[in-house]
Length: 438
Image (cartoon, rainbow, N blue to C red; front, top):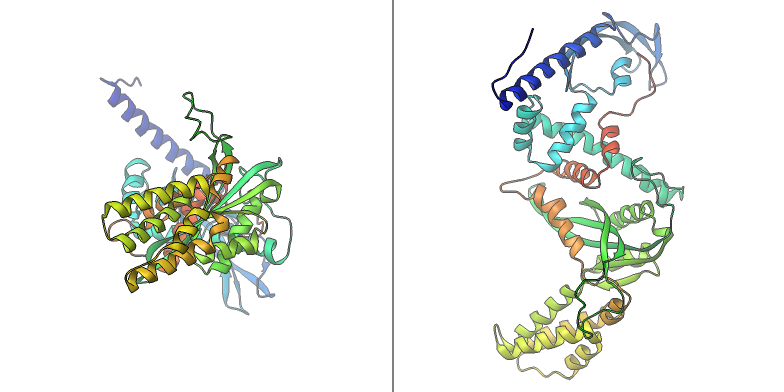
């Protein structure tokens, strides 16, 4: 039989159609060659309760894969002591009560990490020929996300509670075997609507600092740094809604996996939130702490509005001058100006007192001239971008409301995809089970 096509679009469509039909036929034939019955491992099997499960017979099920669907009769065992049953063949294949294979679940999770459930259902149906409802996609993500979190919890326990050597979660992301110059740890929080209310989602991003190339057009001597400033390389994300103490352990575990013990310098960047600097001191003792320069400038501008009024030109000049000196001379000129400042109203006096406390408390984190002379970043832009990329773009689309478990599962899946841990995602698309043969 000779196939012909009048144009390129028709040729492409026919090739894809024939390819799908061949793939489905081949999958059906491969499933059929197992015979009518699979999974028999003897008259009895050990049961998790400690007793023995007895072979009862064969039960039928459907299996849906990317290549098609097949029907299998597999052995069923039942324990009279605990009244539970098990299908050894299902466990060996990584199947649950759902008909979809682990490969389909990994594809669904990766797709849903990027698109809303409704968009993902449309995309998978049109382009992958997987007719799944949005609710089914959500159930898959919750299942896979829960396993990802359990894997992370086991790693946190190994590092923080048992002091065991860390093992990488993804083979494509081995532990660094060379000494890094700098590892940056940047923290922030984003809002998400979970459990019927708005809550903080703590976000962290870890990245290697690599000096940027020297620009072809040299800057003026006044603005040119002594050494090239660091750029962002190899970002790794984490995001979860949990107390600060637990998040600190999670962040530290991730930092160990990123080679913080091999870095010549660890730099913690964040805004003025007390929990950030508490975690820095608890888990990264001796690190370089830097208050985000732009966050400090926001406080300068807020104070200028309290002292001078909104859109007052004198106040704007005052803020611009002190933001500039803060960057070029550090916090001391600003602190001297605040201590000498006199106010006219109780509201302005309170704002001045609060600003003085803020800048005094963070003064050792605002030595911006020295940081820039060493090539250090002074802005927390990477973690602010992470809040938008990890949380905002997926959890805060129009009308989205999440259960606590659903949001956490999505954050686990999305950060895994953004970190390009595809082997880890595929591994957790199948439940852990003992090694059983078909």
